[in-house]
Image (cartoon, rainbow, N blue to C red; front, side, top):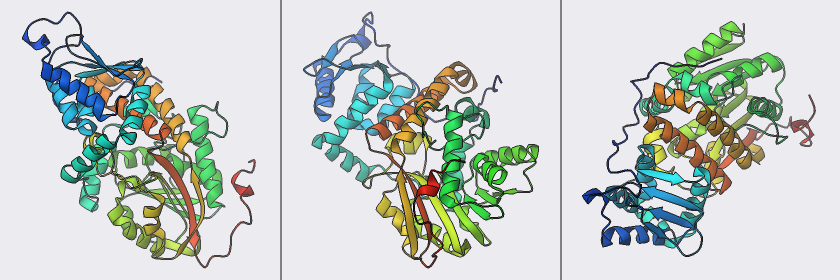
Length: 430
């Protein structure tokens, strides 16, 4: 189906407008001049990253490079862009790339992998990052009112936009599962949903509550294929409308109830609690509240699963992503996630890390985004398209370099002895 969309004037990432000249060797006049201070800044930027295999191409065509053969060239359009990049690279690179004041001559993901590894191993960069985090990087809070604003910013930008690049069956905006490497995105998302359902040992008649239901695809899948009744909570209005319409069209509206409300207001008793890709929005200060909700709603022999992007060590979300794309986001460590479980003595039964599965999922998403780039640019604008391209490419690099993880944690009440004796049930053939 040709998913054409109307020009969306309401969506803006508030990225500063482009200024300066294009990076080619034909630039003339005052704007083309490169001063000794400009060259010093360029060398300082490479030194900050401990001399990575990169070359900086200045706006007059002059090349500043580290010793050895550069893998990628970074084209910088103007002196002010170079200045901003040196002052706060984590924040300003995204804006500068989005509006075209920086270009990457080569593979964007490969460049980002080089930059991420260089930044992670450079003591100079880590000291700068720590100082900037203390001074400037204050993630938005996730109290109920703020959560609605954060979710609206990320998800209510048009269902048609997400339809361009998510799977065209269940609209899953979370990590897929690739038990075989050659699966299509649609097959891998179905495999993920079945993988989760097996972990939860779903059976007909189970009462399931879902915290953060997205566009409703997982709730549909559980109801249709496992015979369960689902109450799915979500505060994205556009997603709720989409999910309800699809459930009605598929005659599942009697099995799935989509509730436009905050997870903190979940009410009733359920056999299963599941949350796929919502914990990133909760914020570490609210993990205790989430644990209270689970304790309040989970039956004595209930089971639960939380699926979340995470970290190996505590670290805030990238400053540009938090500001422009994913406000209020925080990917926790496993230790931080235990604040959900310990207070009420939940037992953790299984932990799986699907980090490389998420990198593969994102590769599929980025390929589809690029395939529909012309339509997305026409509906939004070039800066919006480039920002999302950078977000997806940067996320791939985050998972391939190990700065991001993808955790699935299965849990139950500590007193529940209705437990499987092995993991065979996770991988059984359907």
